Amino acid sequence: MTNLFSIFDPSTSLLNMKLNWTSTLIGLMMLPTHFWMMNNRYNTSWNMPLMILSKEFNMLLSKNNKGTTLMMISLFTMIMINNLMGLFPYLFTSTSHLTMTLTLALPLWLTLMLYGWMKNTETMLTHLVPSGTPNILMPFMVCIETISNIIRPGTLAVRLTANMIAGHLILTLLGNTSMSTSTNMLLLLLIIQMMLLMLEMAVAIIQGYVFAVLMTLYTSEVN
Image (tube, helix red, strand yellow):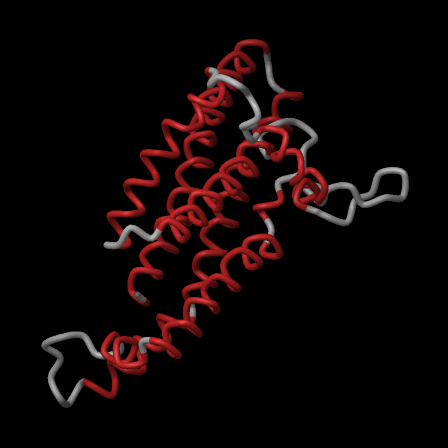
């Protein structure tokens, strides 16, 4: 049990070189290239879901903000690829660390807050007091809304990290118990692991989608 969390340890080294974090760059090889003379099936399979996401993000932003939409699609793609790569054996899951998730959430949130308070100060102040709030509760609502706004990057980072760690730990525990089980139980355990692996693949995609959608909603509030 002392080595249970070793799969999430970024300090393990290979040939005295810490190469775990470089596994994040493997996702760049999976991105489609646009240097073909004609469109191919690989680009089409990428463009179809990205176009659907672009339409949805434009609806959430209530404006045709192409720059923000492109940023959120890139964020979703990066998180999804890193989550899925963590399901491969002997690959490091970078999104299971707060170092990675906070690096994604905190700068984006801080940029939105600075832009909102500098450009739309009145709008940001009105968000602190929901409509229909009694005058007595207004000071308390300002404190509650301020705290909920401050903890947003933390909740984004912890949500992604916790979901990645939970699924990987379950798969690791089941894999470790397979060495001491009977043949009949081993078959049942294999079926359970296959079902959990399919669930983890869905979770990897959903968590990237949730992260991007929540950041898009925060952007729409600022605008």
